[in-house]
Length: 190
Image (cartoon, rainbow, N blue to C red; front, side, top):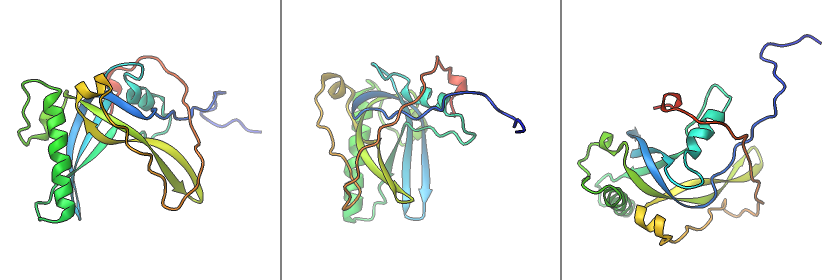
């Protein structure tokens, strides 16, 4: 057998899911992204306190593929201001998100410049969400809402329900990753 380049006897790392719950996060980047149906505010963050501090930085560091992905994100729909029911829901969600960011950062007021969100703290809620690809299913956790930092710290929040696939009875499949050392800000994608 001919040896191939890049050989190294190494246990494969499997991605760990952040447990469901509420966390205090620090926003690392904010970007408006426009699609054909409207725009979102993409917030990239990491866990700032507790047992899971720097969870997404460590996850990013331990990805050994060339197409690394930052998984600590929240996509906040920007209202279209078209008067639709969807727009009304988007406005409530957007207003709540900005309230939670302002509440966790005394003296900060949202000024319609998304770059000013970098470095701000906010509460994030994670729930289980089921996925399906090529006939296989499993579960992962996703950030599904923002909350006030004080509410997270006090445990004063309601956990969102799991989001299963429609008409599915799939079972849970947890994953784990190989723990790594510290990571510097220079190693992050923003």
